[in-house]
Amino acid sequence: MATDSVLRAGELKEVLLKEIEAADLAALDTQEIGTVLEVKDGTARVYGLASAMAGEMLEFSASETGETVTGLALNLEEDNLGAVILGDYLQLKEGDEVRRTARVLEVPVGQALIGRVVDPLGNPIDGLGPIKTDAFRKLESQAPGIVVREPVKVPLQTGIKAIDSMIPIGRGQRELIIGDRGTGKTAIALDTIIHQKTENVVCVYIAIGQRESTVARVVEHLKETGAMEYSIVVVAGAADPAPMQFIAPYAGCAMAEYFMYEKHGDTLCVYDDLSKHAQAYRQLSLVLRRPPGREAYPGDVFYLHARLLERAAKLNEAHGGGSLTALPVIETQAGDVSAYIPTNVISITDGQIYLEGDLFYANVRPAINPGISVSRVGGNAQIKAMKRVAGRLRLDYAQYRELEAFAQFGSDLDKATQDQLARGQRIVEVLKQPQYVPMSVEKQITIIYAVTNGYLDDVPPRDVREWEKDFHEFMDAKHPEVFETIRRKKTLDDNAVKALQRALDEFRALK
Image (cartoon, rainbow, N blue to C red; front, side):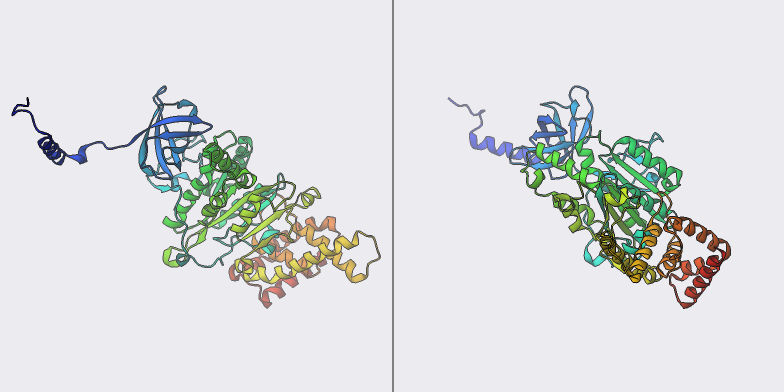
């Protein structure tokens, strides 16, 4: 029989409600804690984090070593989530604790990173000590909208004659460098970085899935040429886990965005290369049991690169006027540009520089094929002086390539055709350029003017390179005002043309 001291059911409910209302809920630790269900190949399945967001940072506590490993939530499923591990996943095992951080992944940014080699999380790997910076940017950020952008019309000079004349790149453009393995894709990107020495452009080189010996060689060349003084190198090597290769281009882009948005400066991002990036993402997606599509890539592989490359932009003056130019690199197999990843990236970018193996082995270097290569920005990204001489160059080069095929049949050719073939051979020689020797735009304009106007027609093709070198030395010594006029005015007006013609006639007389 119940006594008066025993609370009835209704009274018990009222007491509990009063206790809950009186409790300081803010002081309670309501942090969610999950449990690792399984770990494999750089990924983990986690149970118990129902409120986690896609792209959120997670903290894994390794019970055996006591260390904390960072993860990134990618798959949000009904009763568990799939995460990628940004560190040593071998420390983790089933049953380890996982905590939410309620933060998306951020990387350190700022002036302190310039001249440094870092991993995708911003940790230094060059042995030069810690990086001191208080600024951070989110790994993934919204691409600038159409209202804050302005048309691409300021040239980004690469210092490579074939590109600046026929496939010009503008600040804020996305220009793809595509070709087979070993055709000089990285060389073009490095020459472009080296040429920015006098252009006040911060460069970020992102190496994805490359051998560390190759990356060390690249860094050494950048140091030798003084380019590391305005560059950041982000490395996720072939030995690094797939999650690090997956986040590398986004991390490098975030580091460049700091200089575009906060410092209102011009930046250049080289993604070398996005083929390996897509392969790393495919590996993660298959391990996370996402449905495979064409060539076993997941369905969102287009979005993977679209959201990265759309962050390249030229901002209008109201928003600081900064720019981010993207040079993604894609490796083809046996020249097949119609494969899945190459066609995806071609459709996202504003043109492509196509490097051909046959040209490379024929000693035409850089091995650029101007027939397939295109810049969808065109003459808008050229100074007026270059635009004036480049139109004729492209036409002469295209006609030469067409006639070259017929000439191989060995039939008798008329004088006009022979002259055109001879002119084309000299154009090919002029467009050849050794690596790590970018050329200023005014020197490019003078030599292109000379070859397209017949000043080299009587020079044997094998002597063209030497003639060009001697000519530029002569111009530097005797007529530096021609270079200075082009550099200052950026046009080739009638007076400049006459001065250039006089200098060319004078040089030919010496020869």
